[in-house]
Image (tube, rainbow, N blue to C red; front, side, top):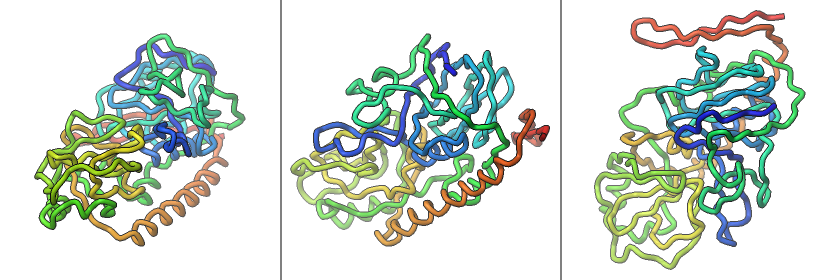
Length: 349
């Protein structure tokens, strides 16, 4: 199967889990911003967990399928439709040659993931297909999708089955993309340079509500709120930057470093977002409010172990659902008392 790009949208790139082992040479890891949604999509369509997928930011592209295949959309709800019919998130969807996938107004979240059974056939650079826009490597020739691009998909042998996991995800995973909240809690560990900040600065960091600005991108998420006070200098000897590191430059506002982060930096890092909450940060949109919450290293380890168990439970859940072979499935979007619901009608063999 091939996928033709009729219009590019705001920013759509090809990503996997990123380039590992090259930061020491100055190469950014890149990779999916929301690793959880990325993994769930690949699990739904029967791919290897590290298969290449599309990461779609805010305003999605218009994509024409040239061949039959199986897809899944996860992450943000960007009002996706196929041939005018709404597409439910977290579900296997059969597509046919000539089908048109379009996206509308973003409803919740910032980034959706489009997984295609077989995975995207694309450039592999340093062991990864992830697009690094600054280095111009990986993915679609090192660039975002553009009008008239044609993307090839690897062959697959998956049989379409009804695999719908919205309820499972909302129960088992700690972050629900579709839940309206006053602010999001993001758990952090302190360090490695928390000693560069006053007690008041640490207290401000952990008690204030911060707002995501529109000056954020895949490299870093810039927040604004109460100023975090340094002891003396706001400079350090440059050292490595991890996914989720929270830098505090001289202006006192946090910058959370994300997938396309630089490999080293010279601002002190007051803390680091724990792995299981990085998807929360990835799905924030400009104007979203959040608070940092301190946890221990032991708690962070326990949370990631619990998430790994959930992935295993999900794999078992999908295996059972795969036994239900669906002849035809139609999804409707129904509005009741100003609330939207997805209603699915299936014809099972």
